[in-house]
Image 1 (cartoon, rainbow, N blue to C red):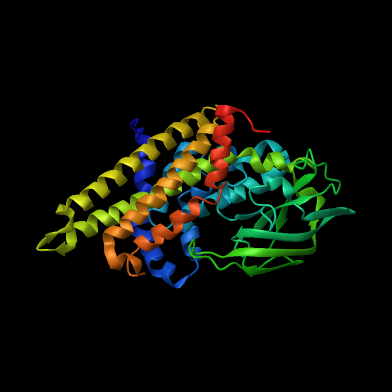
Image 2 (tube, rainbow, N blue to C red):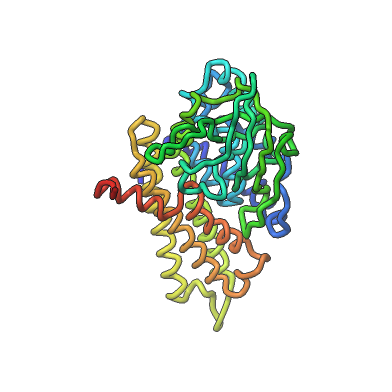
Length: 387
């Protein structure tokens, strides 16, 4: 694995210290009772510049790359994956920069970089998950506004966000051969702490990913100004997929952070737990589990670094991004499961954080494209599309 530069090492160490001192203690306290992340934590993240890592310096961001973004995400995930995901709420439009007008960049990006304008992403629907082109939520032009009607699913942070980026079909005629056309994106601004006017919702009961609420939303003639459309009308499918390489590297980083947290906890526990007169760390079964976990984590991390370098160099790497997302998420579930096993019965209680790492690791195989979708992308690159 390549050595980190001094600058990157400082970024990593700063995020690690913040996670150890602030994030992990909060997670240990709040996750078991499904408590919400306090605004004070979000403000502290804003002070560290985490919401503007990918935002250009001219708009008040740090102007860094996917490499630094993933370094920070990995460290935060070692404490609480939800916090590692929160940083995307400021950096979330970075893949859409080329689709935004100069006026929109001037208005939105500086506030996002400061953590004052954080967003939620409303793309999925009950019948549009992996099949994004199947969106049926409708937006109809009414004078200088668009009126959105339809249902959305899996919208995390819809209540706490300052805006929701909503994808809706603006062209009702759907060509079966080009279903991705006719979809548009809207910046729906809203009061923090509540859903927008014209939108109702129900929290989705999750087994993990606590610290914030994930919503099922119903839009009923919700109005949004026409000026708040992001990108060209009918071409938002490309906007939605523009940042997928970075998003999948980010998911890999979160997966690696969870696995590392599980390994760290398992090592500490194995040295303390005594059975048959000695620490269980002396038993070959435990030692080999730890050796395997550590090896797979390093392999995933090396692949993530390589993918991030390609992204930052502007080299297309959708195949490699899918590979690291697939490998890291699958590895993370294995590693955290083994960490829980090393903890024995105590691992299956909320008294130890390892169960949180395990629950959250399971999600990484689903969001930002399931493992099955990643395998399809990879195999299509190698073998060609199966039409």
